[in-house]
Length: 156
Image (cartoon, rainbow, N blue to C red; front, side):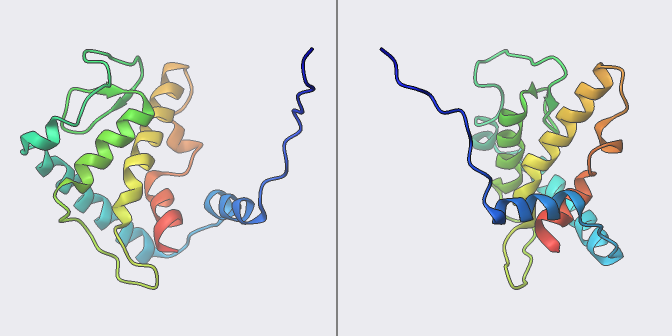
């Protein structure tokens, strides 16, 4: 005898819906916001690439199973790794934060905007590489660019 399984899911919380609507639909028109995101991205990539000079950081990088290569996987900057998007986000994020030299955004809710970029860059690369492999346009033409995603999740 088995119990009835209810597949009806509750509605998402209003706060979650509002956040998704904002990130996906808000039109960012501020040149200053894009310029700031651009500088943040450059700073982030510089910090991540410098982290590759540290053996302790490099030990954290790569696939969970050594030698694994994911077809159309995310490329981890400065390495030969091509990973699944989750492991790539961890790798990129570890590189970005390793030295803790990167940006600080002093505002009402201050912190490191680049903390979002590991996931943003991994997602953007994954979507683009898989779209191209399927004969479609790169995802950046259909999905918000990494800079827009960075502004949406950090600066506005």
